[in-house]
Length: 116
Ligand SMILES: [Mg+2]
Image 1: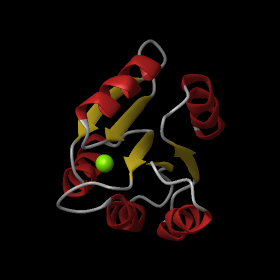
Image 2: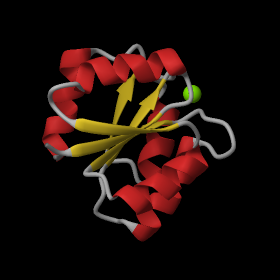
Image 3: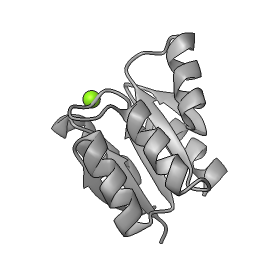
C-alpha cells in the first residue's frame, strides 16, 4: 500500500482525510510545515497532502523545502481558498496539483490516483 504524509494542523480536517484514505493508502501525520519537512525526509512517503495554512512554517515554504530535496515527490496542495492566485502560489512552490476544502472524497482519491 502506498503511503501518504498528511500535513494538516486542524484535527477535524485531519480526521476527515483519514476517513477518505483509509483502506486505500497508508498515512502518517504532520501538524505543521516544519514537521512535514522532517517527516517527508525521514519517512519517504509516496505523496504529501499539504495544507497551505499551518503554524511554525506554512505549506508553501514546507513544499519548497521538500521539493528542493525530493524533487520527484508529488505534493498536493489542500487549501480553504480556491482563488486563482493561491493556486498559482502553490504551483510556484512546487505543488503538482490542488484541492479545495471542504475536501470531496471521490475528487480527492481521483486526484491522488493521477500521481501515485
Ligand atoms: Mg491549516
